[in-house]
Length: 498
Image 1 (tube, rainbow, N blue to C red):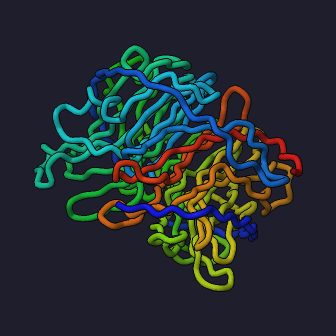
Image 2: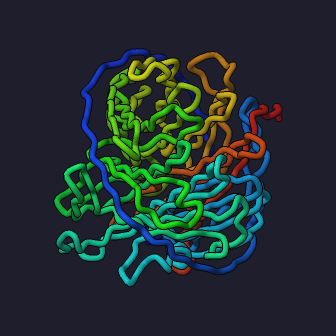
């Protein structure tokens, strides 16, 4: 692939907002369940140092960018790696499709591995396609949790002889220093198994885009379901596991599956007594709740309208390169203090044609299944594409959002914004830039120019600040498309005027 070099041009983002508060009751659904036994197995390695070159500074009034440094350099991978970051008390866990690292909070590398080596003990001889990694830190158990998909090894497989797994790693402590069995428990979970009250059913379904959430002693993993008959939908299955077994390295014999849903499990702070899943459509958010997930799952679904009926976003412009495929509806929602915070990519015309914008909202679910939109808004501007949002909330209900931006005159860059809890409703602070791109993004995946499914964002349990990580394209090296990720840390104070 050939990558073209251009000079960076920056365009400040214009924020607009809107408020909505309508809800529509939908159907009550039944549940399914599954139980399966899993055994734990291990892995290990070492590697070097980060580039801590500072780049962009926040615009006046944006949140204060207190640290920034290189996360993962993927010069021999492909551009646009999916990014995930989790923050513990002392260390950061970061990963892309191809690499995994443990960093201290100044960017120094404690350990580094390729994804394939990190999970090598779990592959059992079948091929593995790395992709869609996801990490989560649980402040209750003080452990890191990491999941990655594992490919079906034979397109013509006949159930129950299909191989589609979840590769799961759980740190043994709050402060893992290595990426091997000394510091991690490793699990292989069979995602082809579904078990209802009528018994177990093996399928030829596989999946990706795993998402993690924890409430109390229960870990939830949701994923998109695919089959050789076609795509079955976002988060078509959710698996619930007793977390206490995972943190002890014990075999699992009491998990349950719920199938047939749509949406991604919301990252949850506190205990609302239920897991929420959220799916974005052009006109609304579909919200699912699941109670009693390990015993008798009970499911309710409601639909919450957006402030207007949007359309699917067009591909994003960039200088001198093929337009970028904007992935729709992949943002993980956040639950805290009776509200769901949601964000989604939408298509909107601000005057001179359709662009990608980001719609965000706070939805009160404290009286669930009643819902009410507390506030909402749009990140968008004429001629500018904003996409790949990830959101975070602290214990004071301060809100942060990280996202990508590009236009005909701006290479793909990483931005952030948000609001303090006391700010006027429906408003966000001015945007700050985490990292600017300086080359065009080249096509990959058989000509599909997919930038990324998602960025990484995490709340620091030590000081309540927010960590972000996202990719930016690099000049190709040895004819390989190239990229790296950049890590930033923001606190809730506002930047001073320059």
